[in-house]
Structures are given as C-alpha cells and as structure tokens.
Image 1: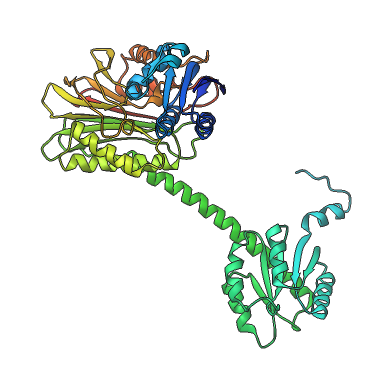
Image 2: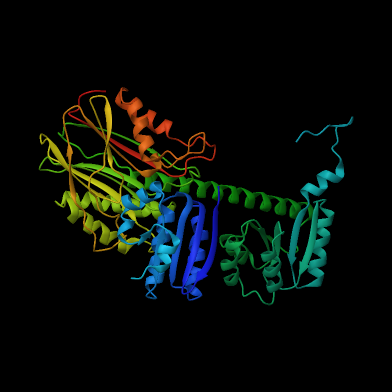
Length: 113
Length: 402
C-alpha cells in the first residue's frame, strides 16, 4: 500500500488530506510536503487523517517535526481524526498533548487558538 | 554458463578474446618509449587494448571515467612530481592495477611506487614482451584479489557492528538473588540488514530492588540503533546510582534531546521498579503501550495512567506512577509496538486488542511456548514482511513454573 496526499488552501489554512499508510517507507513523502508548504509560507496546516490506514512511529515523528516547523513561524498544525485505532496511538504516545485533534475538517479550519 | 565444446576441444576464439581483453592505459610522454611499450604488449600475445596519454592529468581524467584494468605509468611524466602526487591518488583507484616504469638508475622510485599502492614496477630497457605481459596480468589479478579481500573485510565490519549494537541494545540481565526468571526475544524487521532502535534491560541494585525496562526509538536505521544503545546504557547507569520513576525519565529525556540527530526522533519507554516480596511494583510509562499480565490462565492488558513519549514535550511531561500486581506465579510481558503492528492474511492490522485476544488463546501454554506463540501468530501474513522490530521481555515472578 502507498501514501496518498492532496492539498488545498482555505484562506490562510492549508488542508492536507492523507490516505493510505504512513510508515518508515512513505513518511519521507509526507515530510517533504509539510516542508514545502512551510517554505511557501503556509504556516497554518490541517492534516486530515480520516483516510489513513496505518501510522507508525516514523509517521508520528514526521507530524511532530511538522509541528515544530510551523511553530517556528507562530503557525499551527491541527489533526482531523475520528478513527479510534489512530486516536489510540496518539493517546498512548502522548501526542494528544501537543496536537489539537478535531472531529472534522470544517471544525479544524474554523478553530482559533 | 554451460558451453558446448566442439570436436577438437576449442572454445570459439572471438568470445574468449572479448571476455579477457585487458584495457590498458599507457601514460608515457616519450613517443619512442610509448611505441616500444605498445609493440611489446602486442608481441606478447596479451589480449589487450592500449590507450595512450602523454601526461598525468589526462591519465587521471581517464581513470576517473573508469574502464581501465591496468595503468602502465612512466614515473617521469612532466606533470608528475615524483611519487608524492601519486601516493594520494593510487589508493583511490578501486579496481585499476598500476604498473610503474622507471629508469635504470631509479629502482628506488619503483619500490616507493609499490609502497604507495602500485602493484609492480618495471625498469625501462630491461623488459621483454613476455615478462611485460606477465607483469600486467599478475598486477591485474593482485588488484582484484585486494579488492575482494577489502569487500570481505567491509562485510565483516558490518556484521561485527551489528553484534556490537545488539550487545548494546539487548544486554544480559544483571540479577543476583531476585526471584525472577527473565526471558527475552528480539526480531529485526523486514529489511533485516541493521538493527532498529528497540532495547530492554533488567538490573538488580545492591539494595535488592529489581528494575526492568523496555524502550523503542522511533524510526529505523543505524542512528536509531546507536541512540537506543546509548539510552539503554544511560538507563542502567542512572538506575545503578539510584534514580527511579519520573526523575529517571527526566534525565533520559534530556539525554535524548542532546543525542538525537533530528527533532522528529522520540522514544517510548516503560520502566518498572520492584522490591521482591512486595505485592506491587511501580510502573512508569512514557508513550509506551501497556504491559501484559498473565495470571491464572488469563492475560490482561495493564492500561494504567501514563505520560507522553520522551522528546514529545521536552521538559513539560508528567509521568504518573502506576501500581502493578506482582503475585508469585504471575508473569509480566513487556513488548514494543512491532508486536501488534502487522497485518493478518486478510490485510487487517492486528492492533493491541486483537493481540490481547490472541494472547488469551495461548494463555494455557508454558512460558516459552506462550512467548514464541504470541510472536509467531502476530507476524505479517501478507507476504510483505514485518514492518517493525519486535522486542519482548518476559518476567516470571517467583521463579516457579516453566
């Protein structure tokens, strides 16, 4: 299985839809996408994880790295996820403490800090 | 390759010649000497193609482009400052043999060239065709043998490095009198070439307290394995000087922040402290999945309160201590996420819940069969291979049982 990415801009927010598997082999693709967006000056990112089938520790690391990049520009990285299996991974590793996690893309886009 | 032999026993001549043609680069500025050497090579019957250059700079360019089996080099080229420049250059040629030509009064320079990495030297004016051919052929063979030996050496170093890392990540438990039986397993993930960053340890300190730990550096590769080994040794050191619980994790997190190669790297870890005889142990988890407890023929997931993985929110984490029952005859299973992150034959992920179900189906087995059975049944069944390393640390309390 592979990783699928598509991005769209909604005002100053950028939504990145992620599908498939984020693992040691595909995570570099996601990292590249996040780095590109930050380099383009997009500092408010919403990562839609609803179509993610698998997420391993390398993938978690890429999300953490992305958060550090946008924070360096006073930006934000929000996650959209209702899949219990993925939420469990966030809870175990403690990522729920650093990422705002939303029920829907709309909720994430309209959210303010 | 199977080759049919015609009556008379000769292989087709053209094929044999094509396979054995030696590509010789002759670096010689004197046209008369160049002609002489080229004729000697032709007369010798050596299957060779000779290309000539007149200075060291052109020779170096041709060598960098590759496709040269043997360099025949005049040491008196105008732009070659004796052997000095050569000694830097020769060792960088991975597969080209070098034969040096010197003058009659210059044997010392020929020997110096051999010391610098040339395979042989010849004295101009004293060379016959057959001798020259043999020298070139032997030089090429020696160079190939050197290369095979160095490839073998590199493979040995890699294997030795894996052994060293394995010792760093997966040590021998340091136990004296504690009523504990320790069993451990480690399986590398599908690429298998190098260990990942899973590690564990068990130590009994002088006060009789037992400390057990398992950890997992995010990602795979030599950097992660080296970081895992560093954290494991740091944990053992901190435990031996008396640190436990959240304070221990604080120190490990500081070390992780200082040693990690990039800011994506984090580490999950579970560390347990138990004074033998006490009914409960203290467990602190940093982003690590809960332990499995097997007791009375059933397996339970100990999903107690825990804090974030090391390196996620540096310096701001709180790691609550949980109590774990330590009844004689019961067992604790520490594991890394590689145990439940594979897919079954239908492509479904195992996940923690189904792993616990499977553990319950195997709960009646003796220790070793239980551990190996659980690992075996949660391996990848899609044919892609396991996606992560798996480390398992099993503690049987009281030392009774299998």
